[in-house]
Each structure stands twice: as C-alpha cells, then as structure tokens.
Image 1: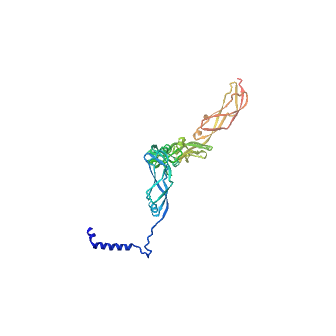
Image 2 (image 1 turned 90 degrees about the horizontal axis):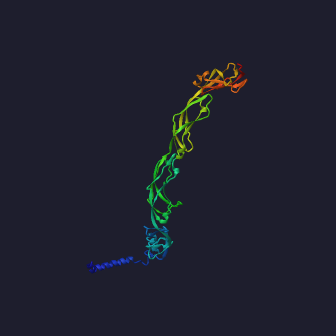
Image 3 (image 1 turned 45 degrees about the horizontal axis):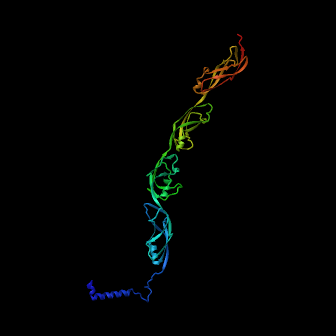
Length: 409
C-alpha cells in the first residue's frame, strides 16, 4: 500500500475519480428534482395502553394497585417521536425494591427514550399496597349441579384429584379465603360416573373471586352416579263388588315382584306397588293384563304390566226340603204346639258355589224357635237357622205360630 501511495500515477487517477464523484452529488441550482427535504420542528403523540413493569421482591412480597397499562405522551422532534411510536423501544416501570410493608405512593417512570424526547405519564404516580406473601394448603371441594342427574339416579360422594392445592397471595387475601371449589362444568344429563377436569376457584365468604395464585390450577373431579332401584312385592287390590252369583275364588300374578327407581328417600318409604282388579266386571274365570301402579315420586317400574289370572265360581241354587223345626228353652211346666207351619218343617233355598251346595241335605241345617221367656198363649216366633259356612240360604217361612199351654200332668 505504501508503494502505491508513492506512485504519482496512482495519485493522479484517484484525484480524477474523486472529482467525478463530487460533481455527481452536487445539486444543480437550476433544477428542483434533486432538492433534499430536511424535516424540522417538534410534535406530540400519546401512546395508549403501554404495559407497566414492577420491580420488587417477588419472592416475599405481593404488591397490588399497579395498573396493567398507562398512557404515555411523548413530545420532541418529529423523527424521534415517530421512531418511539413505531418501535416502542422504551420501558414504563415502578421501582418498589426498597418498599416496606403497607400502603405507599410511588412514581411511574420511563426509561429507554431518547434524551431529545419529553415523556408525560398518566397517571404519573400511584398508591400501592405492599404485603407479605404467604403460601397455604387448602382442601378442594367438588361442586356440581344436582339438576343434571337423570331421574332415577343419584350422585355419590365426589372426589377431587389432587384434593389439596397450594394457594399463594397476600396474607390478608389468603386470610379471607372461605371456599376453594372445583366446579364441574357442562350441561349433559348424567346417568353414569363422570370424570372431568375443573378449574379451582378461590372465593371469600361473599363468593367474590380472590386474586391469588393456585397450584395446580386444574384438578380432576370424579362424580359417581348410580341408579336408585329397589325390589318390592306387587300387591293385588280388589275394586268394586262381585256380580250377584259370582264368587272370586283366587287371583294369581305371573310376576310377584317389581323393580322400582326413584329418589333414595322415596324408595326408602315405598314398600310395595299394586295392580287393581275391578271385580265388578268379572263374570267368568279370565286372565287380565294390568298396569303396575306406582306411588308419587317413583320414576320407573319394571315390569310396567303384569298378568292376573282370576278364577271365579258361579253360585248354584238348591232347595233343601223338610228340615224339622226344633223347640228350645220351653219351661218344663209348659207345652207348645206349632200351628203354622202345620207339618213343623221348613224348606230352604240354598245357594253357593259348586259342591258346597249340591251335597247339602236336611241334616246339614239346624232350624229352631227359641221360646225363652214366653208364657201361656199364642205367639209368633222367629224361625232361626244354623248351617254350614260358605253358603247362603233363605227359608220359605220366617216365623212360626205357636200355642203355649200349661202341662197338667
């Protein structure tokens, strides 16, 4: 390089090149196409929602009252203002490194701006609360909407995993914690056990959400869902009165028990279900399909219908003739003569079911008149009949005419 500088031809060539270069950059005074516009003057811009940083002992302190953003108005030369507006290469902050516990006023500052710019911050100062940071462990309670449980089902005790969380925040805020809940979201009707993730909510006694840090924020909630069922007997309830001449001998169900569903308290108080048989409409043996009737609060029954086999017997009639009338309780000093009926016998019209009637005869009945307390003279006395059970009868005479005289023997 030193040798080239010593060469006169090299120096001459460099001089010519420099002259050409200078000629090309000097503006032509007669032309406006090469004019240079040099900006000048000041301007003002307001930048909104500029984030605020805070410097303090984050491990041991909690500071509240610091706004998330502020508005910054910058004033100065146009290029510098436009550059700051475009790049936002400055920082707005509060320095609370020497803060003490309690409330105090601090100034919001800005750094990183050109010294040619003036910045005005709104607000320029704030009051912050500096508090001790504490961490406490709390048990999480599961919360869900019982209205989402399907009818006939119930929810068991829900579980939360993990069931405890660490909550960090200002001491006075942590002291206000009343509820730590994990609410199961969703509107699906539940008829089986469900497990879902839920966010932990920290609330005070008035159910206001508290500004704290929760670890973990998300927990797993499991709600066991079970069907409420109970097996109960099916009872037969007779309604109405059997038709004349019809006797209900038996009624049998094809299924004797039913499974019912409903609220646990309802099931606890329900001992049976029933079918109702209207016997007034039955004239012969038959099999009926009838609904199973449930009480209020029972939501489901299985089976819903059952078959009832009804066995009936129709009454038959028979006349039992010549049953003698006996005299009872006649004092020894008297004699009694039955004047009517003259033959001293009564005929009975007997009716009942089947063989209970057809096999009856005079010996199956005891017909008598009771003369207790009667004295001499003529009397009308009621005729009384004793007979076998399960049959009915009707005598052709309801009373007897008698004459009582004194025995002269």
